[in-house]
Length: 255
View (cartoon, rainbow, N blue to C red):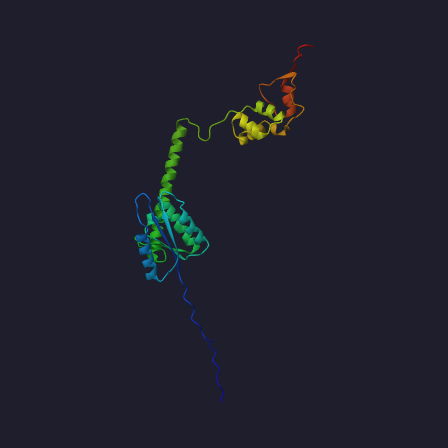
C-alpha cells in the first residue's frame, strides 16, 4: 500500500512582538510636585496594554525649556530605535508649545514610534489619535502663518518710517589697515587695535585690494627718517598706494 506524502509544510507560531515603551514625566521644582503620581499611572497604563517598560525618564525643571536632560536622553533612545512607544502624563508635561508637540509627533511618526498622552486620551496608534494629530498640525500651521504675517507687517512698518534694517554699518579706515598690514601686523592684531571684527577687516581689505599686500612690504615700509602723508582716497593695488601717497624726507637734526 503506497503512502501518500503531504505537500503541506509544518507551520510554526511566530513569537508575538513585545512593544517597548518609554515613560516620560516632568514636575516643576518650584511647586514641590512629586513625579511618583505620574509614574504610577503611566506604569498601570503600560501594564494594561501589555507593554514592556524600556525606561523611565523624569525631569524636575520648568517646562519653558525645550531641552531638558531626561527629554534629550529620551530622544536619543528613540533615534536609536530602543523604544516603540512613548507615553506621557499630559501634553504640557512633554512639550512647551503646540508647535514643539507637532514637531515631536512628526519625528515620532518618521521613526515609527507611537505616542500616547494619557489624560488627553490621544493614541497615535488608533484612527482617532491620528485624527487629533492632524488637527493639531493644522492649528500649528495656522499659528506659523499668523507669526509670519506679523513679522512681515512689522518689517513693512519699519521700512515705511525710513529706518534701515539689518546690522549697523561700521566705519573702517582702509588706509590705516594698509599701513598696519604693511608694517607686519596680522589680521587679528589689526582687528583688535581698530576695535572691529577680523572678518570686517578682511572684507574692507578685499574691497580695496589690500589682501595683495604682503606684511612688511618694502614698497609700503616707512623709515623712521621719513614721514608718510596718507592719501585722501585709496586706489586698489600696492603700487597705486605708493603713487597716491607722498613721502617727505625729514632732515635729521644735527647734520
